[in-house]
Length: 411
Image (tube, rainbow, N blue to C red; front, side, top):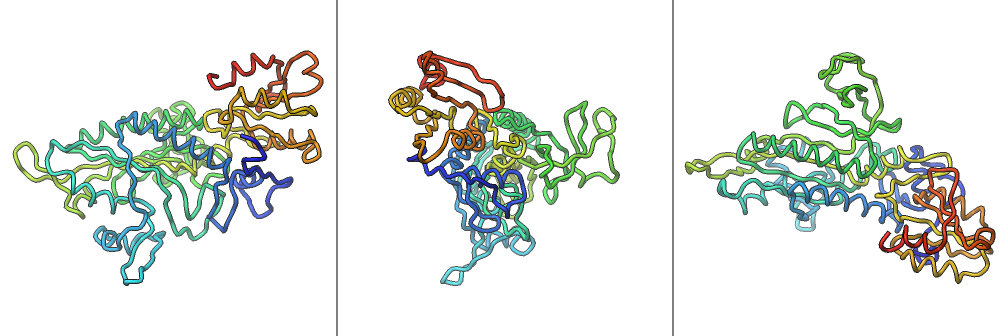
């Protein structure tokens, strides 16, 4: 993709009103634009990153047996009244239509998916089912902060699984736990499995926490087991690890996902039942699996940056390579760009009158695409092109043919 076509606009200095690393860098590098507190526009480069993250999540859920759907964002108030959460859910955005009907802007979708399942589940033969969506959610946060880590409008994947037996639910819980670890590994996020309170629905849940100073959660991390406990469920500082007995280390962390059993709570509210093999009506067992995709994007930046800008992991990066042309003629650059393909390369096609070489290098470091390709008079004299990883100091030289073979359409 060409700079001139792609709505790329970087800032020379970080925005003054952004405190967190992810918000400063994402705004400065032209990935997002802040509309108001907790509300961000994903600009074309940022949307490419978000799409990459969500496609990785989508593949993980599909491989775990999930089927994707898309539910309404606008929820009838009566559904939330049935569960008792119309009044008790503090962060619920509420609105009223011209007819007087009240609605909630969905922060979560139990109040929608349980009534939905009543149309499709009547027998034990209809179960198990695993359904998920990736959707925009809303929470009336009293204090939106930390860029994409705590917003009023955000992107999230939520999967719900429905089962006839507790044992089957728990088996799928383990399937999803492993699926989450694979997703976070692909995103190059070191997500720590963290034992936490299950809140309303169960005694315990499993969170996936990324250790970072910007995190709002405090966890106690065991270096031996590579697992942690959330501060909310312990009574003393630096508790011992429940698995190996070692003293844990207190760390700040970003919660990027959680999984927990819903048990029969919402099944009772909506009378979601099935007939078992003996014809007896029984309540459906369920599990819930959430993953914040826009929050994961913020967590990646918090943990993948240096003093020059973002350092995107390859699978989440908006492009594979950043192509910079420093010679007067664009003929060679156009050939290489065509060979790389517009989906693989961001081509800085700005003229020297528009952007100096130094400005192009600064933008490349700020934007943080994994590989930088530079066409210069010096290297082209030997028919070579410089290629350098964003996270390395020294580069290498390649011929145009070698370059296209490595990074082109089939690369």
